[in-house]
Length: 189
Image 1: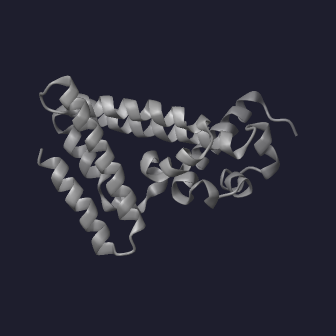
Image 2: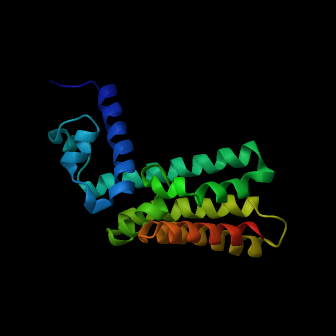
Image 3: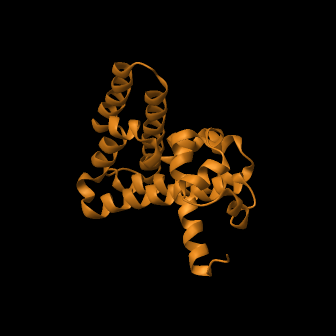
């Protein structure tokens, strides 16, 4: 049975949304095309009508997840510019974010996968990372533009690194300690 263009577009959107969540939860190699499609409520056979390969889907899912992440940060910045940076840091370096990678930061959850893939995945990460740096730069207190940029880069790198470490240790207390220590350092500045 042939589906309408509108339904095909909705199906593709659903596949990308589901893949963005599952790739963050399980990693690129942790989920197959059949399970991705099943989670999207579609049959495995329809996958190649939407994507040339699993890697093509990964690239699109990365772009989607990165855009959603930026939207959230922008909303915080727009709603309360004075408190946006501490709110972003506090939310990012939380045990809730640590325990729910499927809805969290793509850099912390999929960065290593994207780095190991063909160069096609990197432009999305580069663009989003530049945008995250710029957003953080704009939220930092006064200072020369070069200093604010360096601080934005250091802040984001510390947040991503802390999240990766907090997720990979098997000691709950140590995991929380990593998040709390980096949060304390970032919020004191």
